[in-house]
Image 1: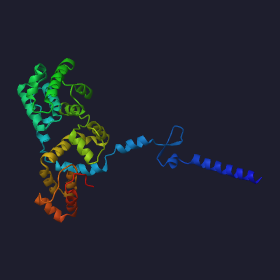
Image 2: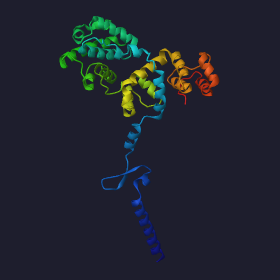
Image 3: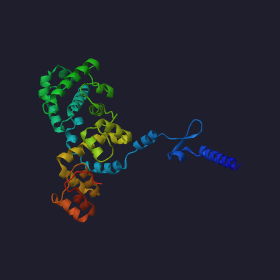
Image 4: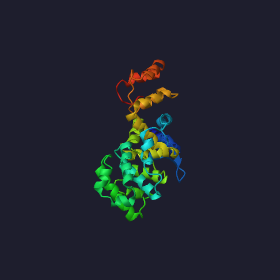
Length: 321
């Protein structure tokens, strides 16, 4: 009889626990958020959906860094601002020729400094940079005309083939869609989005080159391995109102970090938050060392944050926390 009573008590406790479990919300069981399904029972939100929601929000690091970048780039005096791809087409050319020249400038830009690309485009303009003329120009001559750019032999073949395709399949015009542009030889996503923006004023995606890819990762806005992964990651959370200027701002910052780092440091010193700006440019690779710039040394004497930054940077290039 005692054993029977124990069994009955145990059964009663288990049933009560089961009933309590059924009444308990799904969120309490799993620790995650819950929503109502079709049958009214609460179920846990999928982890992937929650991750996507987080990925769609701009990271705090970007919110802190981007206003500083906008101030540092306010004067727009990097090479990309004057001789970037979007500046190399002849604004007085016929519409079809202007669009073609935007495409060619984008095709020549990969693995090439803007200054060299501008020289090559000047040579093509003197030769006659139209679809019809380029389609009739021997590849060997095109190769000589664009010899300043990287991989010029391959690009000469691609430009000639692109002209022939535009004549044969697009009635002598540059394709106006991302799919049509990507079908052209030698045209990748960066060039396609750049051409759409420059030739047709269409902002369908973010143009990502090595500068954008590197800086966005170094500043920890994203964690990606390729420029195309970077483009998709940025487009997931970067507000579209920033898309038109994003590439030029970031490319210019990268160019100045590599070509005129001292000018970038001097601009940091003129901002209201020089320590934050100096930390940003140091993180993207600008060397900061005491004894090289009197104004920086003077600020370090007054500002403990700048003094700590200079001491921490020593000779390394790791990200400053």
